Length: 290
Image (cartoon, rainbow, N blue to C red; front, side, top):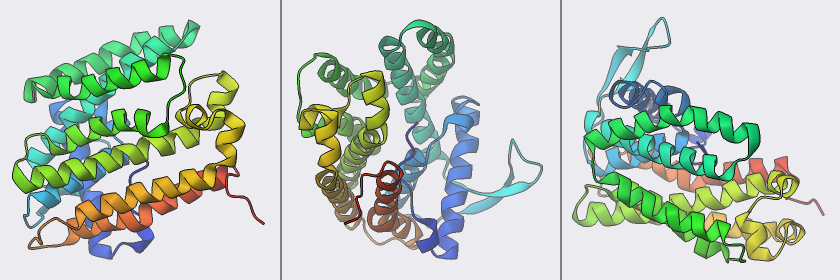
């Protein structure tokens, strides 16, 4: 699912890169244990980055242990952060089900049948996630339902309207269960991560959506696919602003005994986001050489 929010690994220090890898592996293992083995195949960088955010707000020194990888013959470094990983995996399971459910509604023919056949797998992920955190479903589902209505009503919508609905999903997930300043920081960071994901995904899907004649938030905003392609410099600027706003939220996190988590988040804000934008824009020729 997605996978746009990640650090530029070449700009990470060795210890930061090792911690990020250990975070991903730890989340993968815990998700398989607590939610579903399928989370190990579906896990995205976005949720690994969310786990880094929640760990940074915990203000604890990271503890890494060598543990057996379920899919490897050797042990790997894994971050020991059970509460963060359990919650992140549960939220991932619930969001994955909601997305799979929407995909079934939006699909037709054989594609719809295949996605419907896969739905019980996602439903099991959701149910196991809700056993751990019963209240997260409504907080995720409500803004997704609003987004679905906006995308299906046949009317043009400005990008801030549709992106806001998805951004509120990540705002809720990032801040759930936290209190005080930590909750405010997580909500702000999660909102801008969500906004970035929604808009960059629309840019990534623009050409495919044109061919399939499906809804695209950028085409809706600019009044057509051609108009959206011509306005990609404006899209790039708003994506960079989302990452800058995410960086400002991260800067509010209190200094911890080890700043590695915060430095990974700062890398995402100032290097990783820009790298993802450049890759997608170059891939589709959105950046035109003079």
